[in-house]
Length: 548
Ligand code: GLN
Image (cartoon, rainbow, N blue to C red):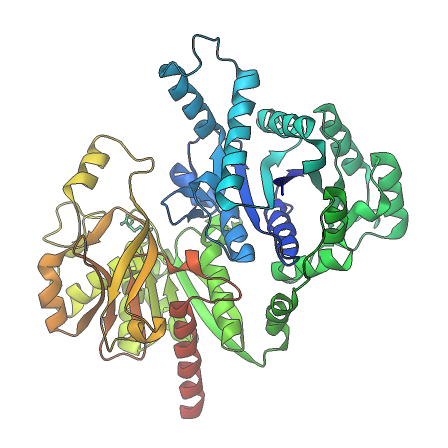
């Protein structure tokens, strides 16, 4: 079978859920028995997402092969249940970088290298390579940005060229937005009509229009869009706001989207099985218990808004884990700087059944995190520390149990008397030479788990692999002193002799991991550490209610 491609393009405005739409289309096709892979195209010049501020751009999602990509890649992995690689991700910067590299190597054999056709050709080459590698029947390709923007024109050009080459194998989906102005109280189709025209002027005609909006699209508007945008009414798909993104595949299926797509491709469905997925998406509404988790970090506020997108994989992992424990989840965003300004506020931590400290960088809010760790350790609140959350848990233990008052990470205090978290010479050189892009310890590394520990129990095996993204490391010079006082080193990377997991002996559940387990949690396969963390939080809650 030839590879098929579906391009997902945004109209009207950004932030309407193109990523989830792409992931959901992939999911429904996968449920028809097809092999599906997904590609994200980001139109910015950055070579990867690693150098971008997560407050503005959202989470940096790391693949097994160590690529720092866009958060949408996380949605694809979670929906499709597959591991993607750097081949599944591209940016304008990356595309130009390889064209320039080839030009320098004389690979264009003396030709003038031009923006068109050479840039779209490189894009096409990358798309086809990703499909080949995944042996995909269908590849869903999300083009970032919105039609009409200058930035994504070359990617639309690539899509148009692929359609020209093989019209039966390429489909286009426009994801649009239908506003309901409050003074009218009516859903308006005009912006979508304009977006379709703009797409037409790029030589592309949408096969489907996915209509995002507050409400379900009614018949008259569906018909209007059909006539004005030249799309069959059945191919106008409504995507109203829903409580959970995991409901969207079923919502599309109700409107027959996968069968319309298969018909246009001339393919037959081998099966249709979304039932496990639907069950998972329903648990959150049926659960009787609630677990309340405080997430203590710093990337939360931009102006008057709270941007939790910078922790999206952590949030999704917490949800998966709660549902697996038959519970609903309530999350509180806690800014660690609040504890620095007013340490009394630390008391509010015990209102939560568990505390999670996610990854982070830099100096802001760090003492607040260390105070949070201390409180969780002393008050026996279940704690999961991820990356910086593990490093600072170690610093706290060194300061308050080993009484090393000068203990710190050299990320914050270069001249720390006791550099509990330090940096290796290669990483130091990277920083000194301003080589920041793509130089952290990135991607999957093996880790051996110590028998009899909480993590060994959670994973149910001794050898695991998890994804990393950090520059600093646990300093082995302090390992035996920390262990002597009750810190358990429960996970080690043997190859590089690096401590990857620490936990506490006399505590219901206190685990710090140097890696990012959140990148591997799936709705149908919750991550064991998140699952057991939530389990411990529910136990703590139960105990609390029994003693009160
Ligand atoms: N800032 C720390 C480091 O670079 C932790 C990184 C993280 O939490 N992702 O090592």
